[in-house]
Length: 344
Ligand SMILES: NC(=O)c1ccc[n+]([C@@H]2O[C@H](COP(=O)([O-])OP(=O)(O)OC[C@H]3O[C@@H](n4cnc5c(N)ncnc54)[C@H](OP(=O)(O)O)[C@@H]3O)[C@@H](O)[C@H]2O)c1
Image 1 (tube, rainbow, N blue to C red):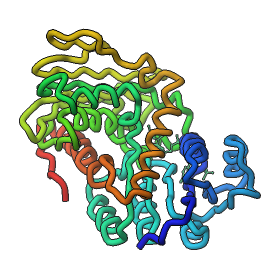
Image 2: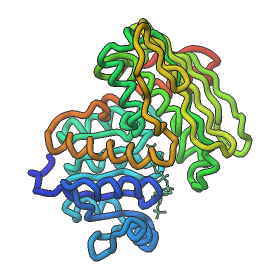
Image 3: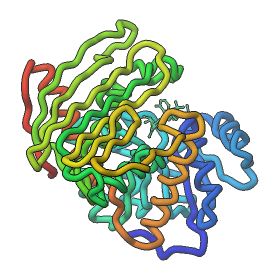
Image 4: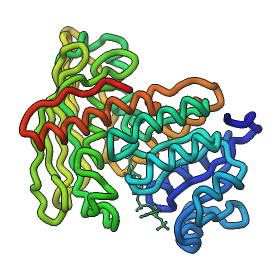
């Protein structure tokens, strides 16, 4: 059970790496939060991360044991910023300790991990948000608003491709398949999430069937770096999800939507009989975009805790995105199609 809320929510951050800097910066800018603990395997590295965001060990306790932080740091919220393979066990531990959890993507690396995560969260009654930060980009938020208001009509077809050469990030764990998964778990989940989120007004639509092909295009990565996934959504509409994690390419997102009354194609909007619709100038991938996306994400998480309402991108919602990419990997291996087990 989460404890009654104090006037400021006490935040603990697990994993003192790059993304933790974004999380902490956003918590610090939210007047309802205070970062009180950080955990990493090495206290000096954790201290360096604190210094990088303008905090010190006098303000924030440093832990080198995650379970000890959960037991003793007097937290309301935990942000999970560790490598992918730790997300499932860290979510379960946080929920069992009664902490609300912000889970970096991917939520896990294997479908078998999902039921226990959901059970722990349900039994503890904690809130979760999965870090699909693109939902909070002003660019995507504007498109979602048009979808919600019916400005594009019924959405008939979507394409979303996420390109980022992961070797360029210089993370030791990213070229380790056991820690990372493949191009679909490390990047493809973002593209899959967007087609689900933008395919209808309101909550994201589920994917029910996929066909996929994966290629080991970058020989310096031990997993498939390029993938194409054709998706059938629960309402019968189609989507194509692409991912390219190879080489040293900078982040680039391609997003196209075709609706019965209008389309978003290559960053331009076309609506029959209507002009004046524009997308924000700052697109995902613009250096100015990251902070706004993380601020939106963290503010949304804090709101969901304080206002006691479930997030539109909670663990349950993210389940279908992950089951869809796991099914895609399975389908690619088998050279064909796979049904997506709906949601547990
Ligand atoms: N939502 C998004 O768009 C987005 C963007 C970037 C990253 N992410 C996700 O955020 C997570 C962290 O990414 P990052 O870019 O911050 O990575 P990072 O810079 O490598 O940071 C990860 C941190 O985890 C700690 N850690 C704890 N146990 C570890 C272990 N067994 N192996 C390696 N590191 C361990 C490391 O600190 P110590 O070595 O000091 O323990 C490290 O600083 C990943 O899951 C990634 O997929 C999401």
